[in-house]
Length: 362
Image 1 (spheres, rainbow, N blue to C red):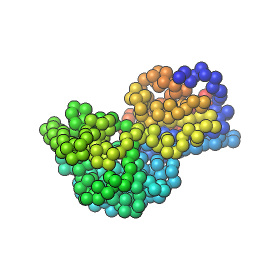
Image 2 (spheres, rainbow, N blue to C red):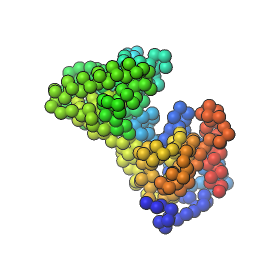
Image 3 (tube, helix red, strand yellow):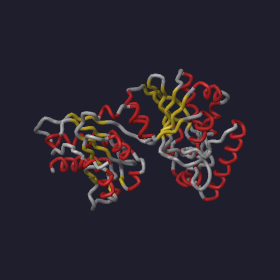
Image 4 (tube, helix red, strand yellow):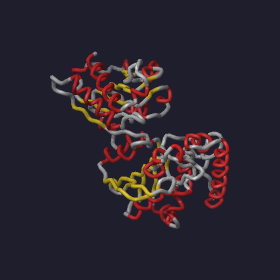
């Protein structure tokens, strides 16, 4: 759709009455909430002497980092803190959310790569046991519907650790519960595009480990297929989170959905933007991959009668973004600024505020 020539009302900054800000995190720098708040501060500073437009900030996530915070913020749920194990079976405190009869599980709370020191990372040993502990805790509280974010795992155990943590209860959970997976990963479980070959090197695996992990996954899938009479190892998303996607698809008949789309639907995004004049979205770095289902592109698909800006830390191929339908593409980081300086949270925040003031003054 050519949004630039469809009769949209094009207005300058003074004409905006309602602005929706819905950015992904700038990974390793600012959370979604912090990015949104910095943009809102820039709008308010630009318009300090006039009546500010109505500004709504929406925490966003594609199912990875910040997924729990984003869903709880949008859906006004309860945060539950428990003792559980990380991927190396060390005791930690982890959180999940409950909204009515639904549990929001961010697997990185227990099986997260960020919880493991770089020198300790080893996907041959890392386990998803803690994910099973979170699910069991919610199940015992009466929860029967689960939304599971599969990003940021340290594991490549195909969910075996999770299943072991459940014991025989996995059979009751299979019968009584429903699972929706929030993930943009479409890889199968095994093979050159599978969990081990594509993702395990990021988790500390060398070439020998990758082959061992892939062989282990293939054997587990064969045994599981014989037990159930069907095989989900080739299903899109089976390779997500080191094969956790496969365990949910094979053992719990889970439904896999793009994480960003799932969140947008859950919060009623279309209704929220209905009377907005401007939607601002963004991410840490935007390039052609942005247009392959990442959060800003998902939001773009929902925007029809509003202007939409893409505000990202860095931008490659600005023309492709504009051609896709973004009305304005804004790079936050000055070209001459070194990346390590730009990644400092306070520097990034100040850069966002400054560039937003400048954009609204145009």
